[in-house]
Image (cartoon, rainbow, N blue to C red; front, side):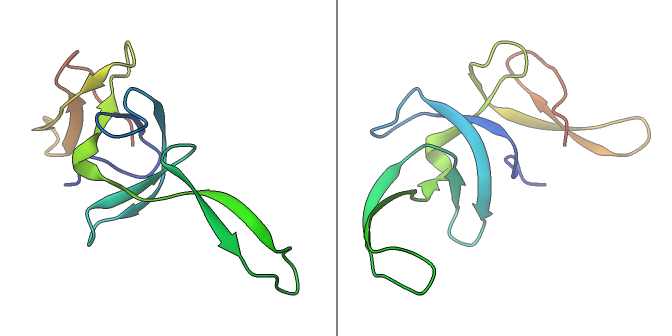
Length: 104
């Protein structure tokens, strides 16, 4: 079971955006990276096409999963993720900081 998923609120632990938080928009499990909205912005030169203008565009670059931590549902601080099995036999993620279950 993946510890982080698309749609999770995460906090950046290292790098130029350390301490900032955002939501995962895309996961790349083979590369162990994720795209986080508004985090790790880079400038790219874009060639003109039929439907886009040429110029310098800001977009998100992938960030390694080791530099991300889930934001605790209670207080928004970084927490580790644990997995426990419920009485029905379902595997559920929970925040180790507060013990609260994570939806999704």
